[in-house]
Amino acid sequence: MTFTHVVLYRAMNLGHRGSPVRADLEAALLAAGARAVRSFQTNGTVLLDVGPGGDGAAEAVARAAAPRLAERCGYAGAALVRPLADLAAAIDGDPFALTRDERTYRDTLTFVDGGEPLPVDLPWTDPRDLLDLVAARPGVVLAVVRGGPGTGGDPNSAVERFTGGVATTRTLGTVRRLLAAAART
Image (cartoon, rainbow, N blue to C red):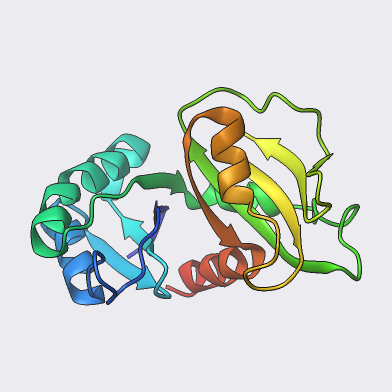
């Protein structure tokens, strides 16, 4: 099996109210046509093998799984689908290096579907100096968050506010571990 895509669910926390448990999430994607799935962590990040259908097939699987997830656990959030190669390209060359400093809490990737391009020049810093939007690539905005848990900048809401699209955020560490896990299979 070769994982080629990832589904990034918005506001999913496996096992919590309104979110599926791991087995239901994986079963929904398999029933929707995936050849293989692997839920990664508990934040709604799922590796997919959809076979020869490519990007269209991966998006079709995520769409087809949605009714089952809604029925089984009430989950009705967005599912953003990306080729794993796009995630690797987005972090190639450490694009965070120029804005990361001793105040950095985390480096993040905010995936966005729909909406308009970012209307600000990058890098952009929020007025509270807790968030730098560092770079934008098709479907993803890279950001550096300062502050700690519950007090830091919020790249997800900033990207949604600016673009009008639907977004979900993962840390750089999560994306690196995801790519490493996909490479091991």
